[in-house]
Image 1 (cartoon, rainbow, N blue to C red):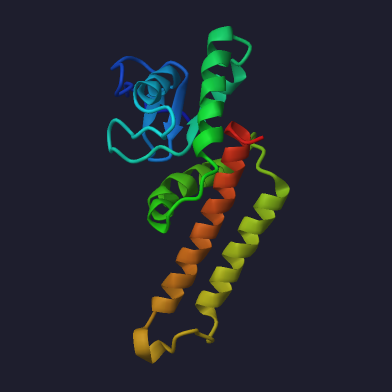
Image 2 (image 1 turned 90 degrees about the horizontal axis):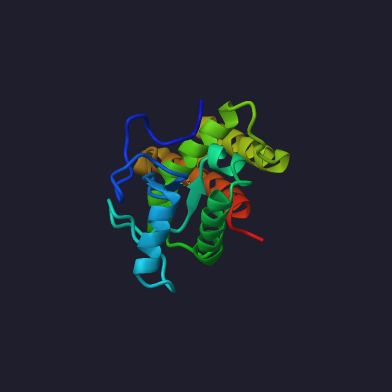
Length: 183
């Protein structure tokens, strides 16, 4: 289970096969050099927008295969640009709306990382994810509610689950940021 772009897909910038592919927080894939050119063509002081959906790109995640090829000077140069981009824009605070939009991307990557035997998610992060998920399940099945069931039904349950998912996504985003841009 490799975490690369879909088979038979092409970079939407150069319309060619992916070269040093990376995934943006909007879930779209680009060649590393292509998305860096898009960024450099715009304002270097601002994050670039996805050429497909126009969302602000706040995190770029290269494939594991690209990371294994770091000894190649061309790959190393592009990965260092991606690293710098993530350092500039990956650690900035995001709005609740942006966090909700990034939620599917982050949860999907987190699930793939949990299921992949060769990935090394830090033990503390794994433990925190499990504790949060277990606590949310316990809350869902407990008779205690913040908002009485007769008033709004499952609204508080949905709110607690959403808060838990947002917390887990924020944890995983911090892991990705440290891997691909943090110091």
